[in-house]
Image (cartoon, helix red, strand yellow):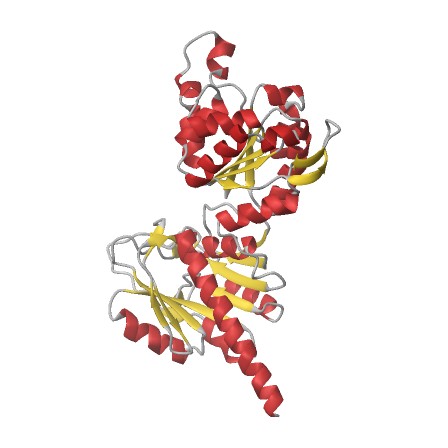
Length: 413
């Protein structure tokens, strides 16, 4: 997820550098926007080095530098506003709070605030008298009424020598609010989760292979979501053009057999296996060492079934949770329930790949979750990231059920 961190001109601006590092530990991508006065306390270069991203501090920086009209810089605040998942301002001065409350847009940060539809979190820091002033408190209440999330300042010794409320809240408190606003949970900490993704390629000759239309997007969304929720994630992936999610161990494979070996090697160390890969059901019996030449004759290719990875690992899963996927074109519910029982899975994520908004190489999906305990959950069309979160919610629920059953059985023994 992308966070835009607004840094304003107060003594606490230096703490924003530490906050960047803390947010990065949570796997957030951070871009910094500074006010001009913030540059009096800390340099843009510091934030650029920490984030690896451009630091913005002027509304028309590109045009000013070139001396010419620059459309890109003129609408940059719109681009940043659209791609950010959350605007966090820390520290937030009394001045910026007043501008936000009154709709003043006279620099990049204030213009960005008006332009974004993303949630906004502000962490004020200022002199105690400024914080207690009726104007500041009125602005705070106005922002709260508009849905802005306020991280109240701490009380204590202030740089001005006074004692009272006004110190920038601690990093943990700010990050806690960010997590809550973005609905980021850490309920998978301590879990080792194995995820498979993408297609496999079954070679016919040196230039041809059998494959399918899987892009890997669903599996990668699963891996990213699990990592964000605190799990240690191993992603076994067939060939894709996707980037490895932050904090995820990636293992590249090509064929069904390679994926089978990689899963078998790591399954014993995981607590949850989520098999989202579209593994080929068949492979050519003969892999030709030379290219098959084209001729006028028809060509017959003999195919042999590949190993059923889901069924094999679920047979000896113990207390591990196993999630499978079912891409169907008809009788989705009937086929999914059969697969759930036949494969000894705990959860089957099924969809009709012919339905609009579902299927391969889309950014959305329409799925129904079929759980071993009889619970069926049909989801509306959602982004694959949102689908991943809902699947993990069900994983957490099923683990709780499994744990409860295990405790009962041991007690009964």
